[in-house]
Image 1 (cartoon, rainbow, N blue to C red):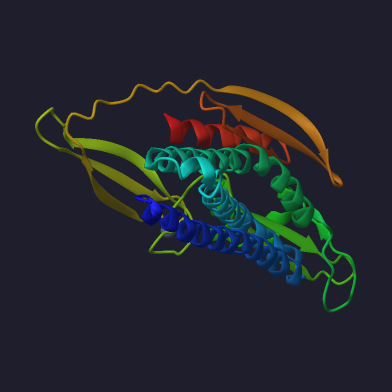
Image 2: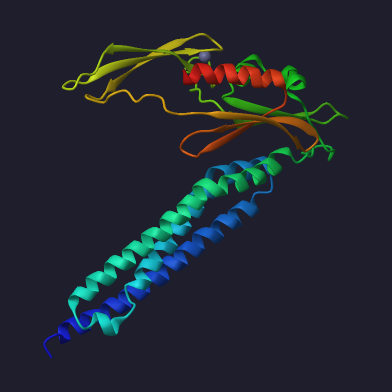
Amino acid sequence: MENSGYVSFLEIWYVIMMGAAFLFVAGGIIVYIAHKLKASSIKDFKGKHDYLNQFEIKNYKTSYLFFGIALGCLMTTYGDETVAKSIAWFFVRLFIAGSAGTLFGYVASLIVTYYYPGKLQKKLDYLRYTPRTNTKTGNKMKLLSEEEEDVHLDEGMQAEEDVFSVDYDVWIDEATGDTKIEKYAGYMEALKCGTCGFQTLKIAREEIVVPATNETDGELLKHYECSYCGSRRTTAHKIIKSESPVPSQIHQAMEVETAPVPSKQMIRLQFYDNSGINKSYEFQGVDQVKKFLEEYERDNS
Ligand SMILES: [Zn+2]
């Protein structure tokens, strides 16, 4: 038969694709199990919080990516009797398998990107607010409020909290006065200052030195100032030619609600924008919310 070469190619293809599908399924499962094992091996609440915060979504995405590839490989082995009739069918099958694998990966990554963070946040909150134990005395510790904690933070730390780049939690053993300070990422971005080392370097203003035209690139200067030690630095950035400035289209709705969180009344701010991403921030008092909104406005104006 003239197409016996094609048929034996299909047989080899089948073996290779089945093998690949098996390997990718195994890979996906290994990534998932390794992640769970690593997470459960970290006993410290803060350590586990940071690990999950950094890796959980990444690892789930990798795992789903492997399953998506496995699905695609598996589908390229389906319906060999029909495919053997004409080489055209081979490409049709390849296309469908590729699409199905991509669709699976896409849907899974949408879920991990949009739905999962809410679930993860609950886990992270639990790990962050579960009362700590003083390792020296075995006593349960108490989380101080924003007002109470300031005396335990040095000025640089307070400056970081003031620009919301870092959030410190101070736990105290009321019997002995021992404290435990934990550092969390804040809501706003600030760079680490090269002079004082605190995360308090923020953009003070931006300056277009050379405007971009349709033919030539422009230049933008970003002036940074450290809100703690006052040191400044400037970076130059290229404005790509013909890149028309995008009008700010983000419409933000804001909702303020108070939600009971373990042992404390918190104020939750939620932002919704056109892309459907919603961010929520928690604060311990109205003053903090006011300060945050001022910072937020400055950053987004
Ligand atoms: Zn500084």
